[in-house]
Length: 213
Ligand code: SF4
Image (cartoon, rainbow, N blue to C red; front, side, top):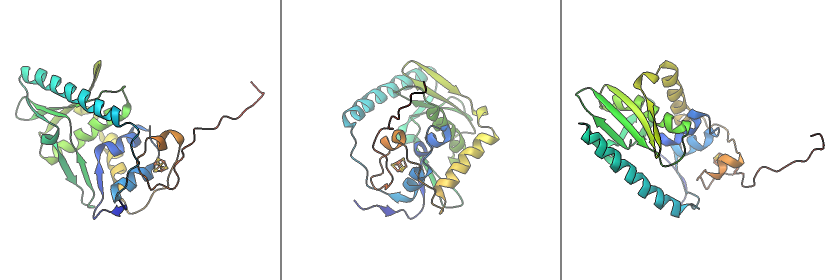
């Protein structure tokens, strides 16, 4: 596959959450994904991914049953798919695992995570809280990230002006015509799937020696 430019920038929610959380720094990675359909590096974790899908589906099913028992009307995954287009032409796309509604105006959005707690997970839900009311879901949306052992509640009140501004500025950067610099690091490049990146770092950080300590 040859990389080809998209007609308009398109950003999937999870592409920006590492930048929002500060765990990622390579803006070019997000910018490139937003602007290009691209060839991906072969995944080394295909077996893990299959297991992840099984575990994740189980967590979603279990939580849906609990929410329905509590009187919620629940929609899952593809049913929750949204696209939000800004006036710049950039589109934000996403698909929350669970949206649960119990009255006419309020909803709970839940994302199920099989791994360790990460700030980027919470940012993912914050981006859903930002987008869902704009795409016709209910007015008041609260959020939650559920892990295998425990959950983190993300009330809609956390979506204060600076938080929204951070989300918007990250979307603006990713959708902009201005190409940001690449910021390669062994840790981040290891998990980046863009085959065409010319600056990928594959070696682990070299160990230097000193006699001072
Ligand atoms: S391989 Fe590294 S430098 Fe290249 S886009 Fe990915 S994270 Fe950035």
